[in-house]
Image (tube, rainbow over the protein chains, first blue to last red):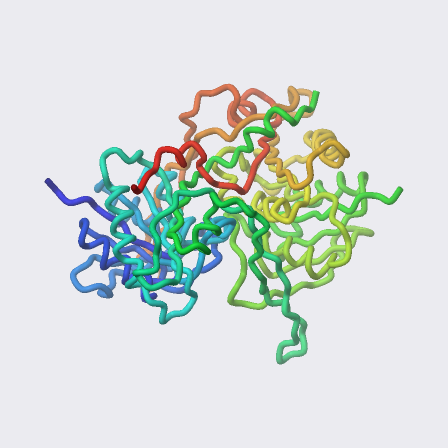
Length: 253
Length: 253
């Protein structure tokens, strides 16, 4: 039996430690091809590049693994991977990450990591976005690796429905302290923003985004709860944004 | 009674004809403040600017209306509007558009217009993204204006729940041929992409995104159906991406 084809991408860029950790797990389970951004793309959400051409460069970053760096966004990487790099091959799984920092709750909307995985799921490809709750470039991805592998094996299984997207977040804990996996809903939390205001060298004003993540959702069935209690959170996610209950409440007659 | 405060933004840029049409309707209903991108931002999705400072410039583009152009994405515009431009004022409604081109179905995910409106709804602000099914810069926004006004009046009403987001698309038809408004779900349609491949003046390869929108969803309760049948489509939309049915199907025990 041929090995599954696994596409790996991320939003922190092809040289980030997180994607290296993900490639190391993925190569144990299948044939790996990497198509990832040539520069950090955090916060790019589901952006695509319409008005500019994209560049794609074959690079030797992971020993023995086919890898391409792309000048576009994470979503561009998935589109180029499917339509240019792998155009005649069936992608069995797309994994994105491991992101340096949380993508729990509403972060899924801003996240390039999760948007890349969502783009794959739009194409009917099983997909997972992985994130570790540690923003540091020196983050330790070892503790999460056995769990990353377990989740990938589960998703590669025959009974798992194609096209489903999982948003997986890993707490910043030693391996022995991770209590297991929780399948949960997206917490109803949000960012409370501020802008740092300053003056540039030409004395022109600028505004620089900063913010604090606030969770008002006290449910014990949320991803934020799971992570705060030592679990890996898994949120099955989708791209149909229709608010079905509201369909019955809104009338223009 | 004081007039409602209406924030207007878009993704085609502050000089696009579509935002002018929207301002003309909004000023009939409330006090209008415009914060919009200084350049076209189509396809930017929910991107935010993290690694660069943002610029905000007071401009005189709409006679008698406070207007600011911003160097960032549509979502950045909404954040700056709330936290810098209008920091002590309650925004009663955020309207985004009128976009030049459809944002029906899955386009909501790629659209800067809808992402700006969604950002407002994340902040608990009533919001509407408007789009006209005509990509042309010379598109005629007159036929849709009475409908835009009607939908805005409805949303400004007291019974309408705060924080709800509507994705409104207007067919490219003369006013007399628009058959009314349909509240509907997002069609399960998608883009079938290709990349145009070429060589730049330095003989380096490039890839340029192109694609065709394909609808496989034959439901008569979808936005695509409504638009093809002469109706304005209204899809109540949300930012909770949890796939609730899948919560029961996925187990790691």
